[in-house]
Image (cartoon, rainbow, N blue to C red; front, side):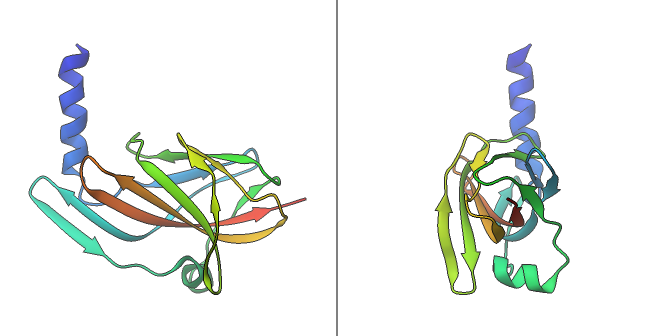
Length: 141
């Protein structure tokens, strides 16, 4: 039975015309990331979209923050249950500030209290798809 379902999952993923929603969850809160730049192809088409930098998005939109304790590990969940390679950086006005540890759907958040614009980059190498998501993280004491 699992041999029949596996191709169906790949077919479904190949038919998506944009990257899946990404949710970050901590002990205190959860929110969906804002989809920014991406390169996405599917069976029958493809598209490249440009988005804003995380610091610009935070200033232009009402971004719901994720609240966390210092050094907390957040979970990252894609709506399609995929497991792309993930890289995450905090940002300041000059660009990327610090690379965070991210692996297997987990992200270690900053130790210092503060508000952090964050870029999460997801790469699906088997399909040559990639996407950037913006989050706002508030690390509280």
